[in-house]
Amino acid sequence: AIRRQRQMCIRDSIEGWCLFLRNLKHRLSFLCGQLLYILEWNKRLYITEMGKEGNLNDFLLILQMKQGNEKAFDKFVRKYYAGILSYCRYHCMNQAEAEDLTQETFLRFMENIASYQHIGKAKNYLYVIAGNLCKNYAKKWKAESVEQEILERELVSDGGIHRKEKRMDVEQALGRLAPELREVILLIYFGDCKLKEVADILQIGLPLVKYRHKRAKEELKKLLGEEDSDEFGKDDAKL
Image 1 (tube, rainbow, N blue to C red):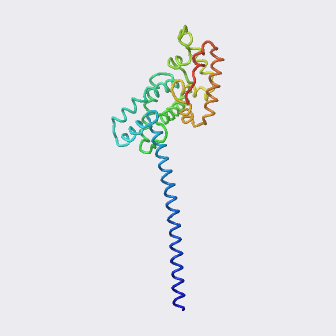
Image 2: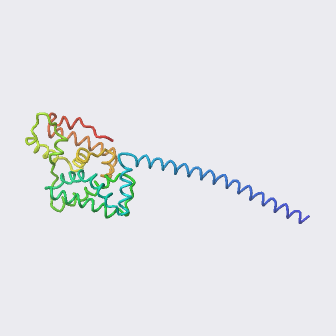
Image 3: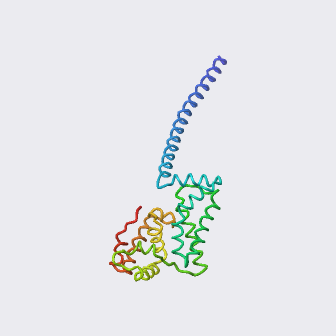
């Protein structure tokens, strides 16, 4: 009787463990299914994001640059050099200084290429580097931002207006804007950045970017006059 009782206890114990293992198997299968779904969703989201506006091309170029491919670096520089140069020119007193800051921007980027993770856009990261270099330059030389012919074409209508007569008005108006408003205008109308990109570069929220953009346009209209700022007022920055 005792032996039979022991056998029954062992059988019950084995059945209990079998039931526990079956339940564990079902739970693990469910969790694995959820994990695979999340991974697949993230993969699709990443591929979609990389496919936007040349992000995939930048991703591939950066991979090649990490492997020491000089041709990839040359393509990358050619792609963004003109934009970064113009941006730096607006914060410098002369062309030579702007070229030095532009070259330094790409050098800083390459110095950190090994640890760089291509999550967002390389262009945004370049503008962050360039912006910091320009701020340091302004502090060193106590120079105020000045605006040149390219930005003037973006802000002032070309019909019937002589640029020489209006250039000082535009420069003075931009110079009188608060620094945070002027930076938004420079990035949108000179840097050809979308509002979301401006938010990433300046590390502020999108609603604040929209507010500063609106405020800056209103201030420029007051400073330049409605007629002189018609073209600028009609422009709507893309998200």
